[in-house]
Image (cartoon, rainbow, N blue to C red):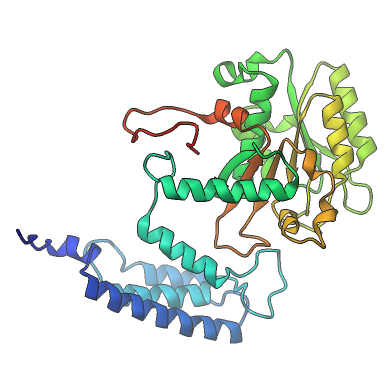
Length: 348
C-alpha cells in the first residue's frame, strides 16, 4: 500500500492530521464553554472600541501564517467584547434569541461536510432533509401535501423569492422580458409596519421602490384592511397590476399580526399572489396553543419563516414555503453541465 506523501506546511496547516484536529477541537470546545459562561455573567452590549479593534487588526496583513490556537483565542476574545450577547439573561432587545446548543452542533456538522445543495446529485441527504423540514412546516401551516420550498439565508431572501414567484405567475414572460412583459406598472402591497427590506427587494427585482405600496395601520399596528382594499382598487383603475399582497405575521417593532384572512380575500379578488411574511411569528405553527393566531395562513400562496428567530437556530436560516413549487421551479431553475447528474424534480 502506497503511503501518502506529506503535505507541504502551508497546506498541512489547513488540513491537519486527525490527532491534531481532535486536540484543536477539544481546545475550541473548552474555550467556547468558558467564554459562554463569562458572557452570561457579563455586560450585554459590546465593550470593544472600534479604534482598538482596528489597531489589533493591523498586524493581520496575510503575509505569514499564524498558529491556529492563537487565532482561536483572539477571535473568541473579540466576539466576547464585540457583539450584543443575546444569551445574556439581561438581554431584552429584538426577537433574535440565542442559538440553541443543538443548532450549534448542527452548524458544526454542516461545516465539516460542507454540502453543496445546488443539486440533489451532489448532496442527496441534505436535499432530502431540507425537503422534509419544508414539508413539515407546510403541513402545520395547512398547505397542500404537494407544497415545497427551500431554506434561505434570511427572511429577506425568502420574501424576495416570493416576489419573483408572484411576478412569474402573474406574467410567465417576466423571466425573459422582465417588467416590460406586463401591460402596465406593477405594484406590491404590505403594511407600513413591515420589514424595510421590502424596499430593497422591490429595487433588486427590477420593479422599483415606488412599486411598493405601504398601507397604513389601524392604530393597533395591524394593516388597515379597508385602506388596503381601497388602494388596490384605485391602482387597478389606473392600470396598475397588483402582483403581491404580503401581510406580516409578527411585525419587527411590536409583534403584531395583520388580518391574514382578509388580506387573503383581497388578494384572491384582485388576482395577486398572497404571501405571508411570518419571519418571526411563523414559529407559532409549532404550538397547538398559538397556532390559531395565524388563522388565514393556510390559504397563502407562500410563507416566509425565519428559524433563526423564534426557533433559536444559528444565523442565518430562513425558509420559503409555497403551495406552487412548480412556479418556484419556473422562476429559478437553471441547468449546468458541470453539475453532477441528478433528478431535477428533487433539486432545490
